[in-house]
Image 1 (cartoon, helix red, strand yellow):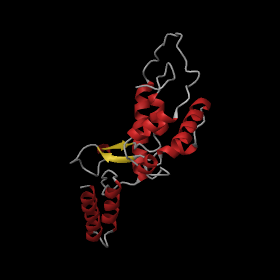
Image 2 (cartoon, rainbow, N blue to C red):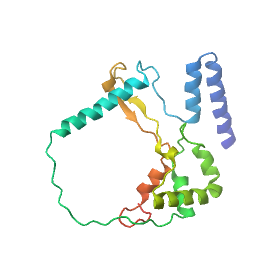
Image 3 (tube, rainbow, N blue to C red):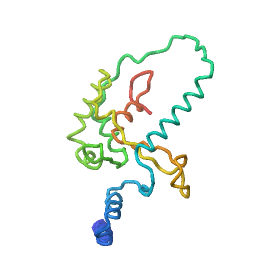
Image 4 (cartoon, rainbow, N blue to C red):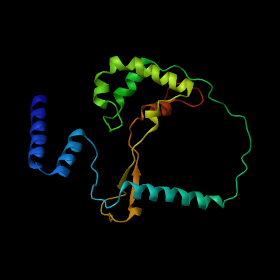
Length: 192
């Protein structure tokens, strides 16, 4: 049954490539589909600079509208602080990677499916990386980058109005973020 599915899957993608021969946009759309990327509308008349300016202006306008609001006097109180983290175990990392969705983007150095396949080899290294990063507060610069894709808020909206777009922040390099969210901030121990 599995080989029948794989054979049909391969025939489908070969046919898509054959149909789009000579059509660069169609070939790229086919490649994104084969890799499991979400469909994007590439017909937008805007450039990246247009979206960047629009989203920056939106953030600035929210800041400007909040600037007139009087500051709230927050009463001071003693709170628990997170002084240290419990070391991340190899088993916790393996469990987390195994349950992660198979999403990959161009910033990832390896596809998620490959990391999952090599989980036994990579888990000790990733556990050490996470533990050291969390205890020292030092994160690789590559984990501080993201790709933001503008998407229509819903189908049927006009493509030529920037107000109809929203930013999509993909899960690239989100493993550390996901792991930090896994921690209970008061105890520093994993849990959900």
